[in-house]
Length: 253
Image (cartoon, rainbow, N blue to C red; front, side, top):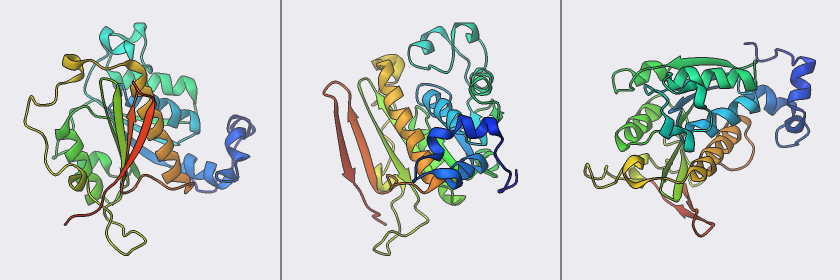
């Protein structure tokens, strides 16, 4: 896609509320159209991420997920519906994206991500969003994004709370120091079984919408250059007490 490909009248009408924003404008909307974003997971976090990135006009969206849609997913994974139960989540999500915005090119990766294949899948994308539900994938995604010098937006949820941050460890901050890595925030994964899964502990559906939508907002900021992304800051959300907190963290090594 050409960086100077003009918008059609339909696209101008579609993105009118973005284009009138001074922080976005036509240039920012063009950046969204040219952006190539890979999303890990089409579940609770991936659902709002994918819906909002598609609606925002991100030109190419990759979806990596090896799971299928189950009835228990529908309480929070709002990109799917009762008619897609049993389908691959990548197929269900891609179809929903096209229904929202036919201008989006959707690439599907219905496979389990591993350290052997993630580099090849990430190649050609300029932003990674990780909505996975396990530490193994989160560390793997962080390592792959750092190696590829691709910004990473990573989020997590549990029961009634969630968190997210942005990682650009290959760049220096205003003080001339390298930005932190994922391991500066979480030095090592917790022992297996210590952190219960959503299936074991439960999760309230709307909390995935809150964190996933914030992840999409960080992605739009990174693509357009608007605002200040959550680099070196962990945003925490407590749903039961309707409270947001931010923790700053720095490079340790």
